[in-house]
Length: 479
Image (cartoon, rainbow, N blue to C red; front, side, top):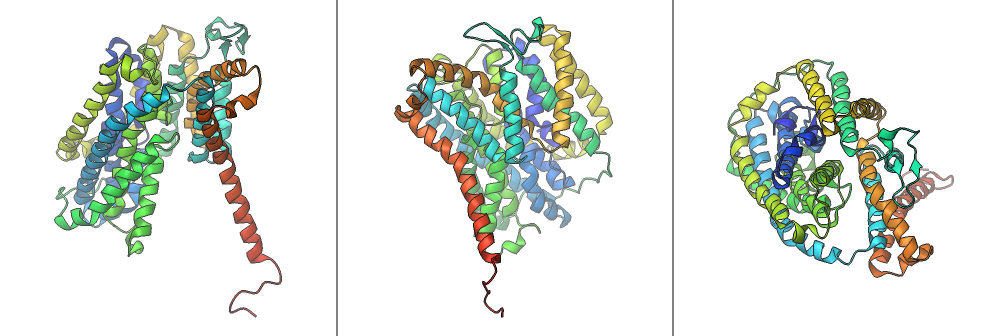
């Protein structure tokens, strides 16, 4: 929650910074801690969105529209209260569904071979690029860089060195930890220090935190619908909390008989996105734990943490490490109850934290990041990598590139390459073999749909615009 309150840091950056801390922990303890950071930050970001009109987390951007409007009307407490209830309900419903669906998905995934994993990895990268907030072309460019970085080091099949430039430090490939710590940790800090050189607002006063019966009645449907949307979209690669909150808000505005209220203090405009982003934060664990496919950037960092612990996420996780799988699920039940219990009494503490200057927090965070990067391998080279990727992350944010697709593509790159080459060996070099297997054939059809659907929509829009403006066609009421 504290991470969500601090604008700009975010769960991906924090988890990346704390990866070295997990080395001395048991796998279950480490993943529970990182998962708690992820879903706890979803509600923490709401506090700054409502009180300061400053989203502490990307998934809280939509909450700003009506949350801050309610705060200006003196109803900041009601907005934060309904957000806490929506977060609890959305998270809890998603955990129940996760408990039921994830083992089924894992059982189905046992039929996956190299061809299926090849198409699944391709589909994951393409979905992330399609849904990314930075634009499709930029997201594809970032994903391409991530795939290129994944090829650095010795070839697993031939042992030939690739892009090592004669450096022994690169012979085993690039480590995930310095890349994540640089892009998400150092890069975010540099970018947010620059962004916060502006007048800082005083937090709005918080009074009467518990929402009224009328507020609960108005927002109950929005909480239910937001929870369903969040769970469904959280499973998709690239979906996650950000897309879920946007979709839930858009649905409530479209359903409302008075859509003009939205943006001016509609309580449903807080309830729906907050329920959706917490439900999505939980359901995004399904593809990670069941298929070994991270659905978003934060899941990619947790994927790295699992590998550090010697645990490979995938279909065998439920049977080989049941204590890890069910430990994480059970911790989510407890975490959601703690979230509801802590959120309201601790509001005063978080409001005070908002007054701490970024110039104090940033140097401490940078120091912890660099020390953490060094302790992973006791390597000064890793510190250089963190700084290099930190600068790259800063430049990407400045130029509108989302670093998420790059990290996801880097994580999926080795799986994609290995599975592709094994598949081609299996098919004697014939690429049409992917279409002969039922699961890989269906996944390939979905992959083509993801590519072709946006192109078709663009062409239809252009042809419709051309038809409206073509000469000789008169509109109704025009001469």
